[in-house]
Amino acid sequence: MERVRQSMRGEVVLAWCALAIWAAVIWALGGENFGTDSTSRFLRPLIEWFLPGLSAAGLDLAHLSIRKGFHAFEYGLFGLLALRALRLTWRMPLARAAFIAVGVALALAAPDEARQAVSETRSGAWTDVLLDVAGASATVAVARVLPSRAKGFFVSDG
Image 1 (cartoon, helix red, strand yellow):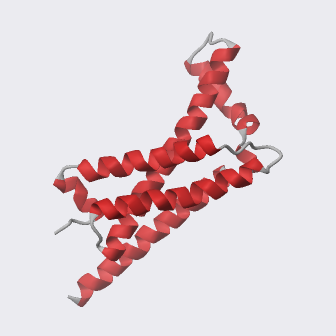
Image 2 (image 1 turned 135 degrees about the vertical axis):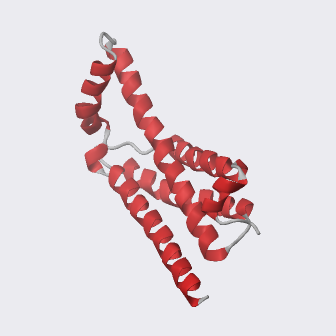
């Protein structure tokens, strides 16, 4: 029994470490080095390679779409990691953990966008906070309706 508890403690620690590491990645991506000008240096050539002949307006739209899509992706993953850490630690009902996980995502997204709003190279926006929260909300909503086998990743309700 003690071995099972130690194994579970290790799993809990790993879950929180994964969440903290991903939060650090998100925070770093929100920094000065990942603004639109910086990412266009490597994204634009990729877009041009995949979609040759795209107009300048089309390139701008594709670049913006990728950047905004990544908001949803990074916070979607953050929401799942938060959900897992919460459920492993407190064994709360999945619905409550999902609600808190989205709140934790909001608690990261709002200050991240606020610091970008005062940056010289970035432009924080409340709409990006909404996009971030939407990404977290979508993934935790999917986790709530997964088949029971997949839900086991988030700790069963039983």
